[in-house]
Each structure stands twice: as C-alpha cells, then as structure tokens.
Image (cartoon, rainbow, N blue to C red; front, side):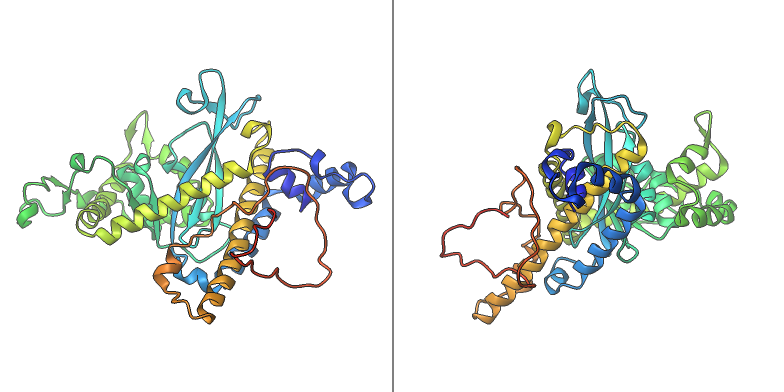
Length: 382
C-alpha cells in the first residue's frame, strides 16, 4: 500500500519509509517494487476493485456499467523518454509530454488505460484501451469528445460491437449519408446528399470480419491497424471499405444526437464524469509539480497504473459510505430517490488528506467507521 501510494502521488519513497520497521525500510520497498509492482499485478488488483464496487446498491443508480467514456490526461515529461512527444499547446515550447488515455464507465470506475506518446490522436488508441480493460462487463457504448472523430473509427467500433457516441462541436458541418442514391428521404432529402458505397463494403466484408477477430482479442493494435489500412497516404481497398461502413453508424449517431435530448445529456454527463475524475487524478498526482519523470515505458505504465488504482480506491471508498449514508437517511424517513442518488457521483475529495507523511494502522476492531453527524464539529481529514 505504501509503495502504491508513493507511485500514485508521485512523491517517491521518502514520505512512506519507516527505517525502524523491517518491512518498510527503503531497501525492502525497492525490492517489492522490482519484484511485484508491474502492469499485470496492478490490472488484477484494479479488477478486484471494479467487481467490489459493482456490488454496492447505490452504484446501480449511476448506471449499469455498459457505458464508458475515453479521454486523456496530459502529463509533462521533463526527462528523456521514448514515451513522450512535443506539443506546444499542452506542454510548452521546450518540454515533451505524454497522454494517459483511460476508460471510465458510468459507475465512475476506471477500467484501465494506455499511455500515448505526446498527443497523438486519441481515437487511434481507444480500441486498445477497451480491449485491455481490467474488469467489468463488455461495454456497449463508448463516448468521446469531438477530437476523436473519423469515419474509419466509427467503422472499427461498429465491427467490434461498440456504439461509438461522440460529442459534436460543429454539427452544422457534419454530413449525413444515405444508402440508396434514388430513395426519397423526406425532410432529410437535401441534407443527405452523399451515398455510402455498399458495394465496397460487400466486396471486403470477409476481410473486415477477419480483422475484427484479432482486433478484439488484442492480437492486433487498433493504432497499427489504422496505419496499415493506407499506403503512402492512400487507402487500400479494405481501408476504403471501413469508412463507408462507419458512415452508416455515424449518420445514425448524428440523427439520434439531434433528435434525442436524453442521448445528448447522457453523452454530456459521462464526459463530465471523466473530467471530474481527471481533476481528482491531478490532485492525487501532486508530487514533483505533477510531472511524469519516468524514462522507460514500464516505469510510465506502472506509475500511471498505480494512479488509476488509487483513483478507483477513492471511488470505492466513497461509494461504500455514500451507500451507508443513503440507507441511513432512508431509515430516518428522508425520501431517498433514484434521481437524488443519480446526482451523487463518488468523486468528492474534501475528506482526503493529500499532503504530509502517511501512516497505516490496523484498527483495533474490524469494521467500518461510523457515519459522521453533520451537526457535530468537522472531523480531520483522513
């Protein structure tokens, strides 16, 4: 726990070392770090937190765990590293950085993530993050911000069984596609002037299905696949079929986005959850000015994996006590409705002490802490 905390908070070992405790000396913590702290073990631990949170009653009011959003947190990398790249917009003129692209479900739990050098287009890596998730059921809907848009991305998500839902900034410039050139689309006749080439999709349908298999199992990375679908900047036959296939689902998404206010609110709410979780991530990752100082891929993945584990631990802790508080209020006669619970996402952190030295004590009696009485004086942070 101390080692995970030092990695997640980016503070190093000094605040968590206890020289007079054999298990907590610097040498012992370094040994545990080298032998046990790696992406595989962090993923297993994260899966346990995800499964534990799904069993809490209040979590069902937030969602079913089948919807998720994918977005990235930017970190400046002031050291030499192959896992970083330039972006004056995010890291300044002199520094490189990396993007931690993570997937967050509607129950506010992080399902895993991947590290992207610099600010390469996030959409090229989203499928990799989805197929390498640490736990939870297979997702049905994946939500992203505007920057992740492209026709080929819609096609790849559809062939893998996901609904790709994107927040659209300039919807007036978006194209609607039809499947029949001579059909009458009524009020949409003028708006849908472009036609999907179904013949190209049919010609490559077998290859498209063969691509979906290794893509879903993780044998082929989505980023590498998209790059292989073109030669010298020109799409291959298969690379041309995927965009035409994707335009079908992009048009369906645009029509639903315009006509269904609940659909738009669902997209906006999920992206708000992701942004709030990222703010908490930056609050936890406060050490060394919030900069990522790992030189090698393994170190970057391990540290950001520890950060994701800490985030999920906070969400799980808050979920447990929100559930207890809601049940206590209901027992006292307060009308605790699903609508009320829906507005209580577990991302509060005023009760968390981010700074100082960290001590862990085994409680004298096992069990959970009593709920606080709002009428009493405010208790110290935990």
